[in-house]
Structures are given as structure tokens and as C-alpha cells.
Amino acid sequence: MFLFYTYEFCAGIFQLEIFAKKVENKSKIKERLKSRKTRQRDASYRSVIEMTVENSQKISEEIVARLEKDLRYISGIIKQKGREMLTHYKITPPQFVALQWLFEDGDMTIGELSTKMYLAFSTTTDLVDRMEKNQLVVRVKDPKDRRVVRIHLLEEGERIIDEVIKKRQVYLEEVLANFSLEEIQQLQTNLMKLHQDMR
View (spheres, one colour):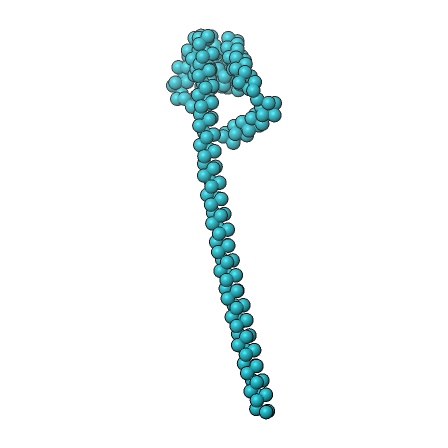
């Protein structure tokens, strides 16, 4: 009888050990599955992040491309409108640019003017000669250094610049008629920032 109970007891312990191992194995399997799912989830997250970064870069490139195109078109329209306005005056577009620099920055040498206009020194000299002949500018000696010759804007040159700029402002005002005040202010802020960063 004692042997029977001993056998039953040992069998019970053996079954408990088997059950424990099964539980342990199940636990390990669950852990492995959980670990596998975690790795898959992490890989999925990384894939999503990489796709998001890639898409954002693509969007950024597309936006930059559209901005460049819009600015190029706007610049072309402004130049064309400017040429149309200049047909009423006896000056060329390059002469107008030169007069505008003198109007905004004051007297300067031919070298300084050629640098601002991205023109060769000889080309700028010919430009100034023609404007001086039309009594738009005059060469004057620098009072601080008589060896230095500066280009001075005359009254006729100021009149032309003032009239053309006012005509441009009227044209721009007509274009902005469909913009709200907030949109105009935001546009001005963004253009000022772009201008500063491009200098």
C-alpha cells in the first residue's frame, strides 16, 4: 500500500514537472512570438518613418520647383511690363536700372555701378556716356578726393525714375486688388525675408 502511494506521489510530481515544462515552453513561445511581433512592429514603424521622410523630401523638392517656376514667371512679367512703360521715355532698360541704382543709393563711381549691375566696366562706361548725353546724369569729382569721379543723377533722370516707379506701383495695386490685407502683409513679409536671405 505504501509503495502504491509512493508511486502515485512520484507520478504526481512527474506530471507536475511535465505540466511546468509545458507552461514554461508556452511562456517561451509567447515571449518569442511577442519578441517577433515587436521586431515586426518596430520594422514597420521604421519603414513608415523612412517613407514619411522620403515623401517630405519629395514634397519639399516639388514645392521648391514650383516656387522657382513662379518666381521666374513673375520676374519675366515684371520685366515685360517695365519695358512697355519705358516705351514712353527715351531710355533703355539697362539705363533705367542704372538710374534706379543712382536714385536709391546716391552718387557712385562707374566701378561701383558696374558691380551692382553685373556689367563690364567698359559697358557701364558706354551706358553712362549715353545717359550723360541725354542729360540724365553728370560726372562730378568727389569733394573728398578730386581724383575720384562719381556719377550724379540729374533732375530729368529723377523725374523719369519717379514716374516709372509710380506706374509700376499702380500696376501692382491693380494686381493685388483680389488679395486681402492679411495676404498682402504676409506676402510682403515673405518677400522681405527671401530678399534678405538672397543677399
